[in-house]
Length: 461
Image 1 (cartoon, rainbow, N blue to C red):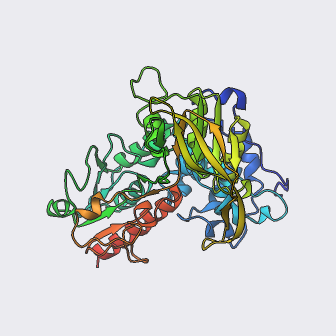
Image 2 (spheres, rainbow, N blue to C red):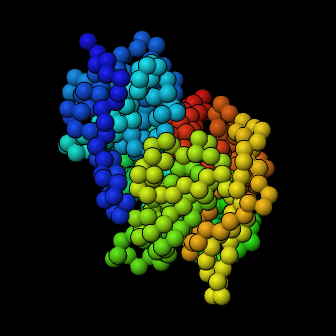
Image 3 (cartoon, rainbow, N blue to C red):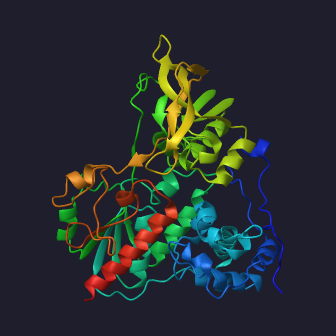
């Protein structure tokens, strides 16, 4: 008989008043017993609605059945037939709006904790596996991948399993993309990412770092090196700003830069000399997951007061509910229904405060959300010494402006065939944030899988 409890098995977490001053992982993970108990809540529905919400089509009921029976390695094998980064996905995927949103157990209670179970299985494998993946026999064809983020890693892994000789060209000094530069250690330990990257290297994937494509090599030069196809998964790393007075003051920076200095460049560790502002009063402008990451990072770097300034209300915050809840528990102050209009500096050109105006919600805009409208005469100041802009990102224009025939839309995103993800250049494919603009890790991974399938089909016609 299935376990008909209406609630998920609770995830053990660090105490909020302890974790908000350290960079150790917040969620501590299930034990074997917890995982098996939660797995028995799955009804193993014949139509498998949960799978319709998964961009990489993880065989969810099958792996959960194995967890319930204590066959954790078998569960891992099932997951990794379609998902090459399960330890990552189990931590950062928005399951509540994807697979878990389709779970029938969510109709009269909480859905099955699919993400927590995926994380448990991946962690169990990492802790207990005695051997890694092995390189398949080569099929003689070569594919280049630009960018070692979620889309690129997924595409590379899928092609390597099919026997392709795959080389990833990564601009940074470390593989992982947003997984290493954007998502903080307390949400996604970098040792986990490194393990996933090592799994790909065991499959034969070569990773060339410090390779800024468009500067060190062009797409044309890569093709001339004997590669049969190229996949572009270069992400969207160009930050946006508001264009208001005071954005050039010392103490104003993008969330991208702030998180990169902290995560990739280890700015939170005392034995690293990475320059980073350790502020006392910080305002983060924006309401997405990146804003939550920046706010919670600022608190851990020693800030006394951290504000999230967002022009809509709490109900409209685009960040995951879990991340908002964790931020509130850790003491982050939410200033919703207000918007910055000016950043004020002191005599030394440093930030001393931010002027905001109160907002109210009007009729829905083109996105379907109610449009924020400024309330005339409602300006007020927040005393801060640092302002972090978390307003979204767009693809860096370097690659498309150095590659003839590679078309982009008005937002700078590469134009692709929706079915194959092939760009306007023959045998050049693209996916993830480089095509969609900033989105989720799992959607980027789904694009990597889609492109790998299309590349294989075309090269084997």
